[in-house]
Image (cartoon, rainbow, N blue to C red; front, side, top):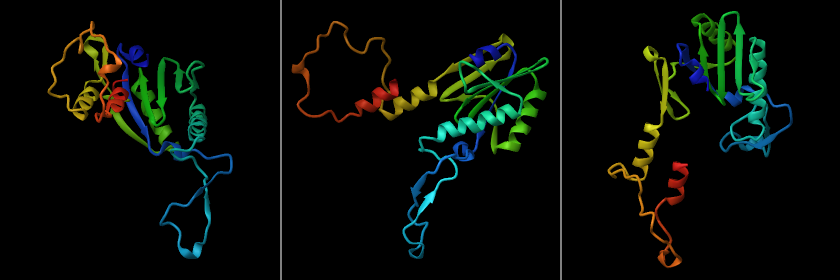
Length: 206
C-alpha cells in the first residue's frame, strides 16, 4: 500500500538496522548456558545473564518493537492504529511513511530534506545501513517508472531459485500439469516412501 501511495512521484529508499534485536534491553531476568569455548575450567559451572534481546528469544520481537517505537516517538513520528509497524510523520508539506519489517525499513517521502534529516537522526540512535533507492523488498523486486508514475513488484528471482533448487529450470511451462479428469485412488500410492523433497517444494510454492 505504501508503494502504491508513493508511486506518483515520491522517493523510496531502504534502510537496514544492524543487529536489530541486540539494540533492545530486556526488562526481566533471563539466563542462558554459556556458549562452548567461552569459559575456562577456572570459571566453573556458571551461566550468563542476558541484558539485551537476541535472535531466537521469545521476548526479542516485543522488546525490539518497544525500543523502536520509543525512538520514532522521540523523532516526532506516530504509528498506525491498524498496523503498529507502520510509522508516519507529517511536517507541513512534508510526508514521511516508514513501514518496518524487523530490521528492514522502507522510507517513502515527498521531500529529500525530510529523509536526509530522518537518516541522520536515526543514525544517532542505531547503527544503520543506507541501502539507497529501493530495489528489493522481502524477496520482491521493486521497479519504479517515474515517467508513467508506476511501481511494479515481482518475484521472478525467487521463482528461478525454486526452479533451480528442485531441478526444474529446463521444464516447459503448462497451464494444467495434470489432466483434471484424472481420478486418483489408494491403489496408485507408491510402495516405498517418496524420496523427492515434496514437503519442501510445497512450502516454497506457498
